[in-house]
Amino acid sequence: MKTKAIVTTILLAFVAASVIYLVVKETSGRPAASMPSTATSVAQPGQTAMSEAAETRGQPAASMPSTPTSVAQPGQTAMSEAAETTKASSKLVAYYFHGNMRCVTCRTIEAYATEAVNAGFPEALKDGRLEFRVVNVEEPANEHFVQDYQLVTRSVVLAEFADGKQEQWKNLPRVWQLVRDKEAFLKYVQDETRGYLEAAD
Image (spheres, rainbow, N blue to C red):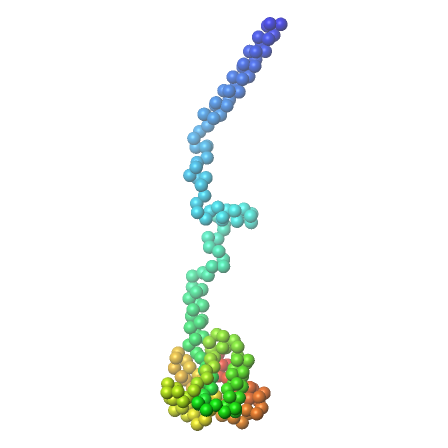
């Protein structure tokens, strides 16, 4: 009975010694190269978000674009600016010229002309190809318009500009004849204005 207890104790001691040996060998005997390096495990700025996005889509991080597709590529901004410059370089100005004395008919012509331009050409007004101006020619700074456009009364004038220089202009004298027919007045002003805008395009 004593012998059996001694054998059991020896076997248990052997097993314990074997386990301790294997643990020590596993922790101390592993090559340094196989240990994860702190430096390599730290993600560089931006890599974490890109890797996560790649994993979400099932793609390797290396295949992810370095810049978002919504960011304008080189040249796009310049092209947009060039387009804006082109639009701004050609402009049609619709003037309504009046004086200090404002009769009912004069005010009606102004109101109809304003409506014709605003209702007929919202896009052209928005992008700068068309502009509507109301000018009092009896103010000292505006007196030159009387000579410039040979004005003899209150008038609607279309003036075309290119690169800041006036190319041509046209007085619309029929506004006085059509002031009692609003629809005909609006159509007249819009047809004349449209003709200039389409020619500029």
